[in-house]
Length: 227
Image (cartoon, rainbow, N blue to C red; front, top):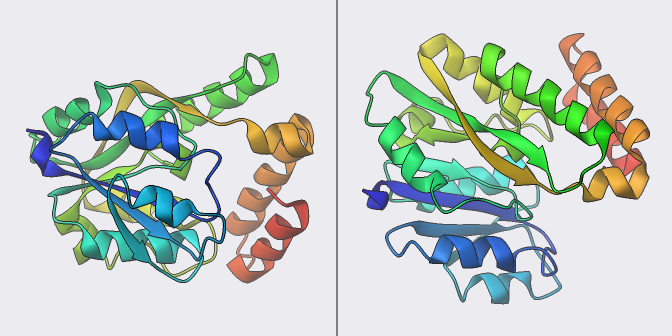
């Protein structure tokens, strides 16, 4: 059953955060693990090679995930962040869900690895967006049929918001499934820059994107805030 699944993890200098996820995934011997490295200099690629196939790509989540998808042999692609924490049952949940040929892909409910009330509320908002509007961001463990992904040409070649764009395209093609999970996302970027400041900046980027501001401009905002 799990032989259907290829996991793709885009990384760049994630030596301090990657091993726990790889350890969990490696328990499932049938899962194909592909690490798409964007030019790490801290030993990330060397660590990753102990657990799966490492492919090199120019830096950028969309580019890296597309490169990883090119190397994948599974019928289902599962995209994970390097610092995600997953439960053992989640891979099997995806494969069982995707036995329904009407389902093209989906994602999971999210929780943060921090007990802050503000972060809990942010997670609630993300889960409402995913469950009712089927817009999945990267930390919600997006999965998709490889055939559908290839037909769409992969992630759009943009510097950010690629997950929003591909979710919108997939919604027009068919059904997306929200799985409860949850997947545990790292709160490190919120802790680094402050929860409220980080949240406000992220929402601003989304609003500007909807209003038609170019992704190149949004990338400068993103980098200035170092999210």
